[in-house]
Amino acid sequence: MKSEILYPGAFPMVRIELASGESVKAESGAMVACSPTIDVDSKMEGGFLGALSRKVLSGEKFFFQTLRATRGLGEVLLAPTVPGDILVFELDGMNEYLVQKDGFLAGADGIKIESKMQSLSRGLLGGEGLFILKISGKGPLVLNSFGAIHTVTLQPDQEYIIDNSHLVAWTATTSYNIEKAAAGWIASLTSGEGFVCRFRGPGMVYIQSRNPRGFGSWVRQFLPTAE
Amino acid sequence: MHENPTLLPSSPSTTNFIPNALCFGRNFPAAGLPCRLDVLPTELAVSVSESSVEAVPLDRLAVKSGGFDHDHLILSWTADGDKRQLFVKDPVVIASLAALTHAEVSRHIARSIKGASRTRKATKIWIWLTMASIMAILAGLWAASDVLVQMAVHRIPIEWEHTVGESARQQVLMGQRVITEGPAVNAVQNMIRRLAGRLHGSPYRFEVTVVRNETVNAMALPGGSVIVYTGLLKQADSPEEVAGVLAHELSHVVLRHGMESMVQSVGLMTMVMVVLGNQQGVIGALERLGIQITTLKFSREKETAADLHGLHLLNEAHISPAGMIAFFKRLAKNEGTPIALLSTHPMSAERAARLSREASSLPMTSPTPFDVDWTAVKASL
Image 1 (cartoon, rainbow over the protein chains, first blue to last red):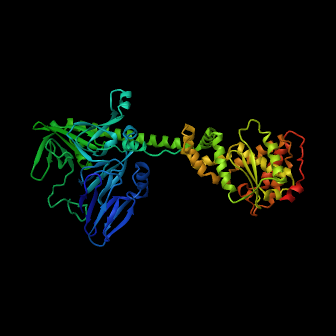
Image 2 (cartoon, each protein chain N blue to C red):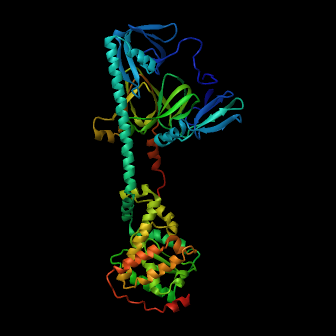
Image 3 (cartoon, rainbow over the protein chains, first blue to last red):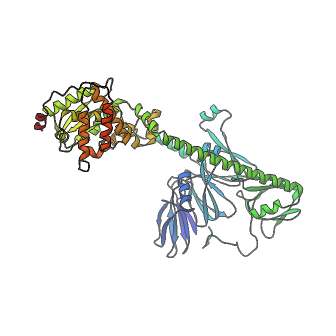
């Protein structure tokens, strides 16, 4: 499996080359085009209940599709729904990644995806919802973001504060707490930041340069209202 | 990116170097360097490759639990002024660490393992509590949905009901031949006047439309529009029988059954929106559903409520309830024949019997017969 990011920037696509017999897992609906040698079958990762829990609990699409090069080598073009960067990196089998729902675009077939429940305070205040995806295994993983992806690297015990709406993914070796952005409640809410995540290393945190929720409320003001 | 046909290699390359931990430090990659940890009686052997092995004496080790699920054991030490951390998840390695006889380290490890399992247990309890409370709230909402519907309907202004009813009326009358004058219209208007006159303080304006249609049907739409089909008038043997059906239909309006059913069909969210005061947009949804009101089946409870309310209404208007009961009984016999009124109002002997029982317990009022030549009315159709 080889991958290449086409048109990097706001509207990228990822081209994945599959050798004969190889397959790739992708978010359903992400496929743009593929060679005639590729077969598409939707697969409920983790069985029906697993898929259901992922759909209901984390808001992730019900099915992942598996694109398999059954009749010889071929290529697949994949694109996310929202404008923004695509990031490809290799899972080494040791590191586990926690990915905010909607952040997953594709992954090698050997990658395992689970829905994880966060602690209550993180889930309710964190802004990524009560459930997130835990991705482990070995092979390439493709993430997408809203806006550009910025990587934050944290040394052991190094701390960094991140607005919760900007989180894309982070390694399981980091830990974080939800806290108010400012010292007081009023200041926290009026500053427009509300809650933030205090991450503690070691590990990596991937953040997106745009806030989907903020964009949503910005767009809303231009939508015609019903009479 | 690498080429890998299976993507799940069981052993990396040809060496024996199989990583079982992640090592962090100033000169290591930020995501951690896969390394191999071997537990020896007095020290740990940490190798980042086959050739480079670092020995860490157990005395210099600090131990705690961590990671997203609290399932990692974190071993920290300082080497050459650099703080190093080792994240271990492999149960085999954790077991061999726990089996160490080094007093200090084994105490720390035991405490960390206990602490981690306590945290995990607490998280699990929280998850179950959250699930249970969500279930309880949903069950509560389910149980209280009738009350919520009523609350929501109560918040809907009467003008909205008129709007919804009016759009439904236009839909029903589309392509129908409306009779605007004549003995039948006068007779039905007289009945509505007598019945509506007893509905003290009702905010509804009852207006009746007679439609030339052989279907045996009558309906009252939200807001008070009443539509009577000539087929129904032809089936009736007396004005009291028609008045009985009208009393039942007016009761549906007064009890706001149509609105309740519509709100029920647009869903819980709409109800919540209406109850919370966000009423904009709901009217549009209701209007779009307007046509459904004409084919809406009410629940058995609502039919019974409308029967009883109608019966009282007849009694107060000094109209003999015998007509209503007789008409229902006759329709019950016809059950199975295609009469529209029956498809929305299933008649049964039981229902007529209940009405008879209820009628006999009503306070006696002397019925005033309608001043109308019913044979002439029927002949005019």
